[in-house]
Length: 581
Image 1 (tube, rainbow, N blue to C red):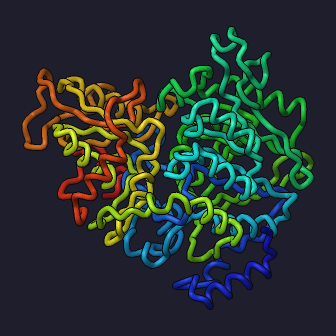
Image 2 (image 1 turned 90 degrees about the vertical axis):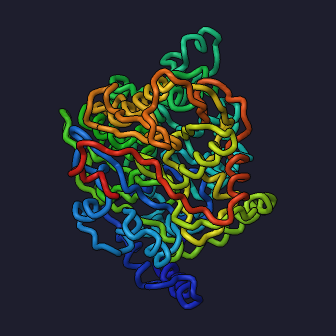
C-alpha cells in the first residue's frame, strides 16, 4: 500500500471526522509525520518490536543509570533530564512517547502506540514521500518473539507480517531461541535478507561439515548485503546480538559462536570499501546502544549504526568520532513504538549530509492499513478465546522496563512465591513486555506479553544466602560494568522476598549490600532459603511454565495492587540523570 501525500492527508481528515483520531486529529498527525525528503537515500528502521502486532501501551523507564563515560549522556537520561537534553516540551506527544512522566494520564490523552497496521501506513507514507526506489527498510531484530501468537507459530506470524511490511534487511537475537531448524525455515519464508557478520560456525560444526554461508571464512550467515538505493550503492552489515549463547540457552544455537568481533568488522568494512566503493556503509546492529557507541569510536569507515537490543528511544543521531572520521549512532526504541527515519545526502560517492527523526507511532494519529489489519485479524482469530481470557483488573500501572523491578515483574515474582510457598523469587531482567493502565482488565494476552519464551519452565531450589548474593553481584556487574563490551544481557534480576542496597559505582563483588528478608532479618550467608524463579539459561527447569502460574495467581485476585515494589536502595547515584523515581 503506497499513499501519496495528498492521499495520506485525505485519509487522515476522513479518519479524524470519523472519530478515529482524537485530541488533535489530522492536523497534529500531519505536523508529526510530514517529513519532506532530503538527500537521495532514506533509511527506515525499527527494532525490538517483540512480536507486538496490535497497538499497545509501553511505559519508558524511570531508571536507566549511566556510569563512567556513559554518565549524563544518551541513552542514560530519564524524565525531565531527558526532556531538557533534547529540548522537548513537557506533555507533548514526543515527551509522552519518550519518557515515563505522567504516563497514565498522557496515555489516556494520546492513546496506544505501534501496531503493524498503523506502522504500515506510516512506512507507506514515508516511502512515497522519498520515492520507493530511494528507501530501504531495516529490521534490527527481536521481531519474532514476545507474544503468544509468535510463540505458538514459532515466529512464522511475524515473518509474514514483515513480508507484508516490506522489510528489506534484518538481523537478530531472540529469533535464535526457536532453534536452528525453525530459524532456517523462517528465513526461507522471509523476503528480507538476514545478515550477521559476527556469527561463525564452531570448530565442532566445521569438523562435522555443517552448513555455512561461507565455508572459507566460517560465517554462518551472510555478513553483509549490497543494495542500490536512489542510485547509491549501500552496504548493510549485520551485527546480531553478540552474547546470545550467554543471555539465552546455548542449547538453541550449539553450532554457532558469537561475539562483538570488532577486528573482523573493521577488516570487513575495509574490504567492502575497497572492493565495492559504496556510497554508504551501514551497520544494522543488535549490540545495545552503549556497545554501539564504543564500537563507533573504534571502528572506522561506518557511516551510521542503526542499533537495537537495549530498547532506547533516542530522538537524535549521536555523532561519534573515530580514527577514520565520524559515525552516526541511532537506536529506535521497541514494541513497534517508533520508526527511525534517516535521510542521507550522498554526493560524489560519499556522505555529504543527513537528517534524522525518530517518529513515535501513535495509532490514534495513523489510520490502519486495511490489508494489514485484515490479515492480523485473520491470523489472530483462532487464538482469541485464549488471548482474551479475563484474569483480574489492574489497580495500578503495570509495567516492566527499567533497570530494576517493574510492577509487572513484581506480579510474576509474587505469583511464583505463592505457588511454590517459597521465601525468595527471582525473575529475569527482560526489557520486553507491554504496559497495562489502571482500571484495564488483565488478560492472558497481557501475561504472554511478559512471559512468551521457549524456555518458560519454573523451579524451586534451595540456595544459601551467599549464593543469592553472588547471583545479584553477577547480574549487577553485567549491568554496571564500566566497559560496555562486558555488558552481556538485560536489566537487573527482579526479586521478591528480599530487600537490598546497591552501589553501582562500587567495584565488582562489593555492589550488593545489606541483604534482608521481607521480615527485615539479615540474609544469613550459610542458611539455605527456598528460592523460585523461571527462564533458566543453563538447564531445563522442572516446573510448569510461568504463564500458567501467573494466570492462576491473577484469577485468584479481583484487583492487582502491589503494596511493595522491591527496588533496591541505591547508593552514591543521587545526582545521576538516569535516576527518576
